[in-house]
Picture 1 (cartoon, helix red, strand yellow):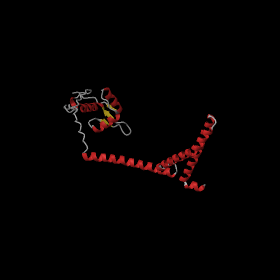
Picture 2: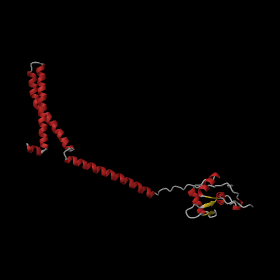
Picture 3: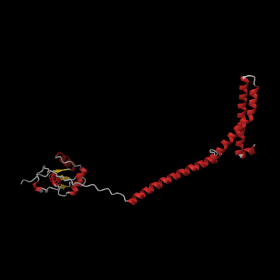
Length: 218
């Protein structure tokens, strides 16, 4: 057996030479590899200088590591020629997916109860906010109570009917006394104007009655 020639190289040179042998590895990864594999020969050139690596022993170490597998037997180091890379056999074991654990009936009920409580709390908060807004607008006079509006419309209807009835007799007499159609039309126009005026006056009286402060000011 002939003695192998020792070839001392730097880490960066070792990375390049390994890449030429289809053995890709970065320099940081090679540094970690050397720390874990003391069988790779190396020597220090002194403080502040890069550590040199025996490339032949590095190739043997890498070949031994790559040749190991679940179904293969490691090849002795002295039988591995430099530059030969054993076939790497990988066996991937099938992993059955874990069955998803279903939540218990009590957990499902608690979750549903929490959801319904959250919805109810939200609806209650929205209702309270709307109620507070309505009360504030009522205090500012921007809203009128529904019952007050209903009574106001009823009173307005009564006032309109009273104004029409009060002016009806006068318009009938005016139409009878008219000399022609133009005179009758003028009588109707006067009747409509008088009814509107009487109705507006009645509405004003109703508004003052609903606001005692304004009535007292007059």
